[in-house]
Image 1 (cartoon, rainbow, N blue to C red):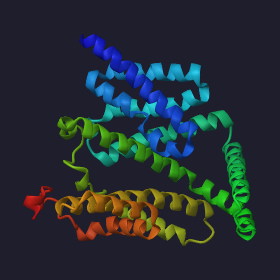
Image 2 (cartoon, rainbow, N blue to C red; image 1 turned 135 degrees about the vertical axis):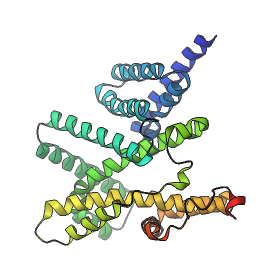
Image 3 (spheres, one colour; image 1 turned 90 degrees about the horizontal axis):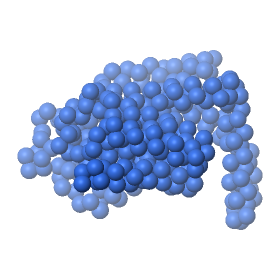
Image 4 (tube, one colour; image 1 turned 120 degrees about the vertical axis):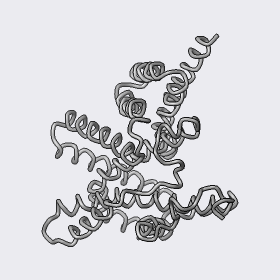
Length: 317
């Protein structure tokens, strides 16, 4: 009976992880939500029935996608499968959440860059292909807006700025990719902790994500990158500094969210108001920047008084 349950869950996990990837690639707007969740069915299955069974699902999914959807989609899944393998191996051994997330994302980022370099043969060929692809996608979007009847003056202005937009996108692409990988790892860790709350203490060092605080030395990297930006004549270093700033800004943004979630929990704020606040933070740039600032200044303000207050609302009051 136990073996029958494992086999049925095996095929359920295989179908779930494959469908999530195919749907995410087929519907790009939905893919932002679905693709980070691709490893989750396998991770949940592996931690419930055994890591070996989870690895079996990963191998079967790669083979299935290779036959059904082609080698390109199988390669994309292989990258996410590597993330699942690293989580199987490191979750519980590397208990610092920031080092766990950054370490796994760093390994996958490096491997992805190596694979791309292998296929293209040089960075210049890779950049040219990405530039051509971005130009084609932006021009296609512009044609769609023309058919929808947008003002011609606005469309002409956008057409003139397309080269600048493409150039800026290419400059920030490394940090965007790395941040995306970090968020994907973090999302899967959060879901695993919710699925298996009894194992949370074994897996990560913080009792709750509302307690998370970034490493203090990170602020010195922020300051150093800020100085580099204003040094004239060092274009490559400036681009590198901007990419590092984006990564650090994301870390402080997450810390700011943790502070907001802490006080929401402490004061028993209704879920509706929490949802409205998070929507404003996601879609209004001024609120996004305020959250980043909140996370940064928590280094000096220690707004949550971690170690002094309990996360239980009655005790915190």
